[in-house]
Amino acid sequence: MRAALVTEYRKLVTTRVWWVLLVVMVLYMGFLSAVMGWAFSQGGGTGPDGEVPVSGEGVVRAVYTIAVTFGYVFPLVVGALGVSSEFRHQTITPTLLAQPRRTVVLTAKMVAGGVLGIAFGVAGTAASVGAGAGVLALLGEPTYLDEGSTWRILAQSALALAIWALVGVGFGWVLTQQVAVVVVLLAFTQFVEPVLRFVLAQASWGEGIARYLPGAAGEAVSGGSLYAEVGAGTLLPWWQGLLVLVGYAVVFAVIGRLTTLRRDIT
View (cartoon, rainbow, N blue to C red):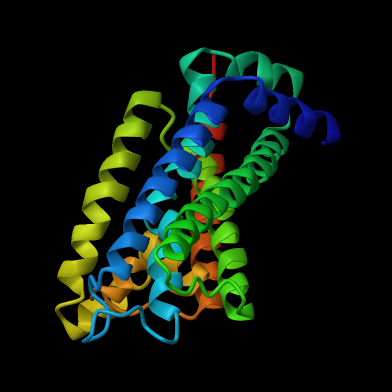
């Protein structure tokens, strides 16, 4: 197992894809967080007098957790590419020849993906906080970084992003065609689920379903999100969101083990 873990980790970090996506994520999340910080300081969606909410919950959830709302696609795609790229470049054959125990290969990829996911979680959260708090401070607004609840939410946000990498790895075992993987993940995360959540939130029965969608579960782990603030339905408690998101990763991994990894691979 140790040799398999080292091998899979090296496969991930010796390619350019992970750090290119990491840099793009940091820049993108920093930009969005800065914009949201400016919007809150101008009274966009805040209190009746245009001030930032005194409690700070609106700022923390909408500005500092922006990576969980929009940036989770980056660790998700990186995790999926860690599997699908092997099938595209036909390196999966020597991988399974070197380690015939396919469950070990699957587990090693999940662990390696999780380690890389931690890097994305920390970097994405730090970029959001740095840019958002910087803008708020420059505009003379409170940053709420002196509150313990804020740091708890930040830690949970980083955790949610890390788990998204595991979901990506599991999904990569289900759908191994690399182009299809990227198209499906981008379409679902950037269009299908956001629209579906707003539509379901309009019905009492639909809101209960929307809370269990993967994006909503990830936002629940962080304790809130911009979508929840603007009426995309309520979220699960953070620990339930954590179980649901981990459940998606496990279900995808099991499906991949029972389908892709049971077939002859050449």
